[in-house]
Image 1 (spheres, rainbow, N blue to C red):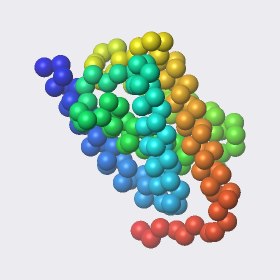
Image 2: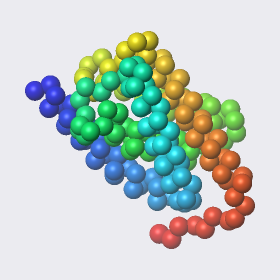
Image 3: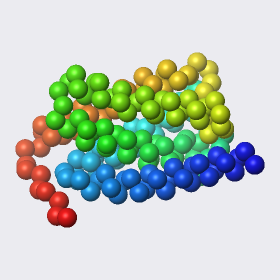
Length: 164
């Protein structure tokens, strides 16, 4: 019975993530948002695989049994949050970028803490805790913001607007 709740939670999060991805990525400049989405999925999966391999984090319940990482979080939800964060900080200064990272990482950390303590979706082990997750979330958000800033700086071509 308990595992059914967790699988339904994962299904809900997947549908919500798919819906949100179409809404967020349609905003111009689409190229930037797609780059961030793909970059964030790549980085999140590498970091998650390292944490799982080092036995710091486990995912007892997973929709896709052939993955030992959280596929939905790494490839869908976290990249969506990152795109949203980058859209919110598109014109921000350095202090604004750092402060706004907390606006995104605090709710994510609270949800992760709930999932870790009340469900079998994620379990922390061997020194990993919610604070480690919080710091990792902030750092990866800021790294993704720096990544797209470098891309924008190196690419001098004008990004065309999307046609609605």
